[in-house]
Amino acid sequence: MTQFCDRAGNRVVDAGHPKYQQGDVIINKKGDRFSGVPENVWNFYVGGYQVCQKWLKDRKGRTLSDEDILHYQRIVVALQETIELMAKIDAAIPGFPIE
Image 1: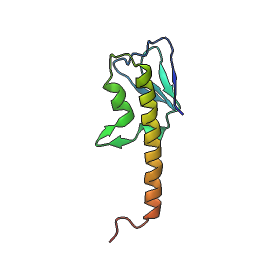
Image 2: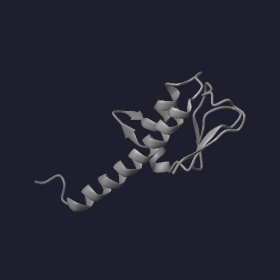
Image 3: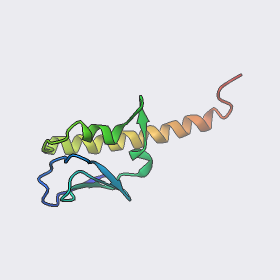
Image 4: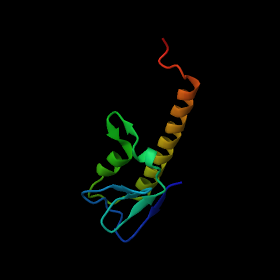
């Protein structure tokens, strides 16, 4: 499960953030971060948008509430499960597209 680490940045999403570094999504210059975010989840796109990045960018300048943090953690879990299901579907239909 993804964890939020408060490093005295007041949970504010700074301009120029989020930034991804080795499993951590850093949201501000002080180093507040979500840890334990898999790289494949961070790099997952839906409709041309990088989901984990866009959700936080849309909150630039805002202080994340406890509910916001929990919601982001749920997004990470949902994307991880989606990626796993997509892999299972691809394995079950090896000849896709069917000719």
